[in-house]
Length: 310
Image 1 (cartoon, one colour):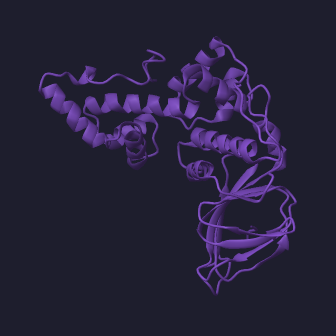
Image 2 (tube, one colour):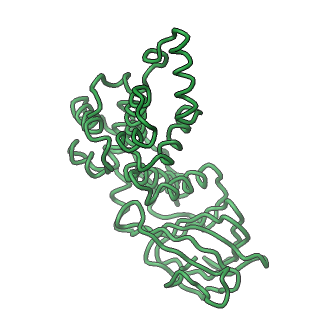
Image 3 (cartoon, rainbow, N blue to C red):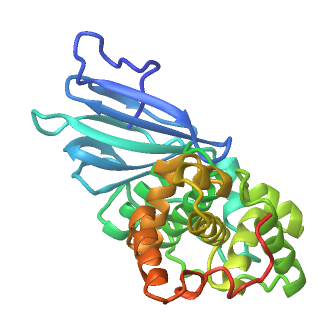
């Protein structure tokens, strides 16, 4: 679907709106929108338009056929692919979409990274719940404070996944070329030394002397987790030590590199199943019973390094 130039798509109908923000990298734009009355005339985009329908039904004509996108369906428009668009039911439709500059594709599709894929999608609407969920996670991560690494990693992963699964010629990802232990250890140590900052894929790639997509996949192959997951583990481990030392959760969150206490709580619960307060109460209870809080759990980070967070 297309977009409109302002946040108020139709001033007379507040249910028609479109909002834009920068994507995970400068060559990507994220748009979220909902329309009930607006009808898009036939048009095209210079960029890839990769989106997911959240609510309602949107209908359009593309490639000489009529299409309908239902909640959870993916929209996959190639650059310069003409289409129109309108509601399919009275309730209108809501969706989010990434506009991706075609010039960015070589950065995502690289032989050494094992991410080669077709450069064009084979159909404009597909039903692929796992890929739709991955796209929504990537969109949710975009623009989040202290999450630049995660936002770009999730965006790159889903773009590659979609082109491999739904490209004109389906492809299967392969293992990246090994980048060498010395490079990977240097990146790991850089993450540990600077975990309180908003690290980026570009910064880690410079440290390794690799492309961004190659660095991400080589790190995951070497350590078993991608850089943004490792960064989260380092931050959480540091925060746990601060909590056990009696530091207030809000201060522990900021010192460890989280944007705020809410961000800290989301990541903590996502990794442990507990809130920071719930975890701390259990650890203090074990310590009081003689269990020893400092040895009650095994560090996810210590498997990779004994270097202290700094």
